[in-house]
Length: 95
Image 1: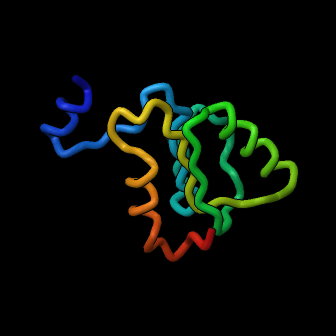
Image 2: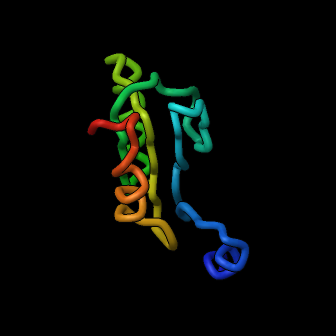
């Protein structure tokens, strides 16, 4: 039902059961993660919020940066393909 309502207004949804998204290039943290990761050239996504949290923690301790970061959750609307298509032309993401 949420996907249908969002679609009526031209919106897309991440999740449910998602940690959220981070756009380090724009300094946007729309997630439950604390803090902002360093800026880098890695675009990362995972279905699992737990994996995302572990990767963010490791990246901070190892000083690894990200351009984009997404936790997909249950993928009621946006999935891996949607993010790969969106990030494919991203000049800030190399990996």
